[in-house]
Structure formats: structure tokens, C-alpha cells
Image (cartoon, rainbow, N blue to C red; front, side, top):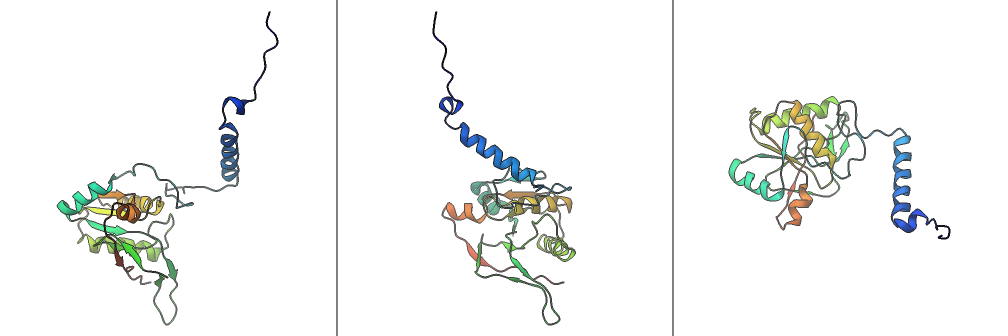
Length: 197
């Protein structure tokens, strides 16, 4: 007959269990606080800098090599949606972007700040729609690449918004300017397109 068996605590069996329990508790408290990551229309509405999914519906996901090939063969419109602080309009000035340091982006890109937030006020929604139409020459079939920086949900949201506007050849470059630069490719200064209210 054998003696009584020793029951070992679970963290002795699985050394990562305490960390897993802590992570689950933190996640539960964050979700329990009522924070919603997505709005009713499916746009990401909180924590815009976080790991991204692999795809976004309505667009083809590109890595850097595929983007370079697309640029060389199809001449796509490149749209940077990195956020910027907005200066409201006054009696003397139109609304403008306050950019404390130069934005470096992919060569040939157009910077349309803040169009990747979940909720857009009418002036920014109009700004996105009008600039996409201008950049594509009014052709919804023109290839459009949307990007930001690594782990930026604004690019994901902006792709979904472009799908809703009827663009049919959309590409998503989730690595953004960080991924482009990490492969040794050059960035160039770009200015945000003016916002008129």
C-alpha cells in the first residue's frame, strides 16, 4: 500500500499559471469597466495602438515586398492616415493640423490625418470622401493603399470606410511607415492635406 499522494500547487506544475491568472483578471476588469473596443458599426473605437488582425474585409493585405511590386506595376494611390492634432477653425483661421514635428511617410503618399477614427465629424468625413475622389480621379476601381504605422487600427478603420464609399481595389499595408523603414526603404517628409470647414 502506498502512502498518501502529495498534491502539488498548480504553479509548480505550470509555472506560467499565476501570470495567466493575473492577465485574465486585468482583462476582465478592463472589459468590466464598460469600455467597448468597437462601435455599433464595427469600427475600432478605443485603444487604436494595439495588435492588428491579419486581414480587413474588402481589401487585400500587403507586406512590404508585395507593396513594392504593386507600386512598380499598378501606380496605386498611397494614403497615410496617421493621426494629428486638429486646430479648430476661428473667425480668422480655417481649421488646420498642428504638427509638432515633420511626418515622414512613403514616397508619393498623401497624408489624410484622423480619417481612421471610429466617429468622424461631418467635416472630416467630407474631407476623406473628397480627397479619395480627387486622388483617384473619381475612379472607384483605381488601386488605393491605406496605411499608418505598425499596430495602428486607424488604417483598418479607414479601409473599412473606403469600402463603404464604394472603392473596389483597396489594399491594406498594416506594417505602415515603421515596416517600410525597417526594411531599409526611404521615407520622405509629407504635409497633411488642408482641412476646410
